[in-house]
Image (cartoon, rainbow, N blue to C red; front, side):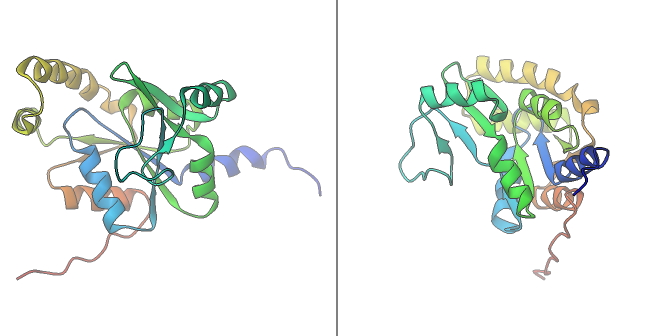
Length: 206
């Protein structure tokens, strides 16, 4: 069969469009929105990260994370196996395996990758045809309220995170779409719609 060179980039880019990358500032609720989608929309494949940290009780390899030794992770980095990877909290490494994402896309699944801003930039280098969505807070004041309200960080850590959030918010123009997380269900449905799926009909509770 004759190979038509010109069609390959178009085909690859079309496949990349099945990948949606969700990123945004600290405390905006990326994890909450993506977990809601995972629980409500089984047709969406939520990407599973590889990590060098030890499994916690109840965690299953290949379901919660792909658990790797430091040596295995090093080899995968050398082989270019990651769409993106980073060191988190100066200790453990986390990354998105290109093969797992490509396999899910090949199976006809819509893939959601929830990562930080730096990871999103790495994916954009590797798969520019993907869809990039910025999850934004309703307002700066609401984001501060959420962060402080969690009560999980010291005042000093809260201040550091807010300074980082200012930098992260400035990256919004780098993304294709912005979804405001004013309500988890509404934001999730909007994101699912952007992914090319039909949001589930809601039954009135009244």
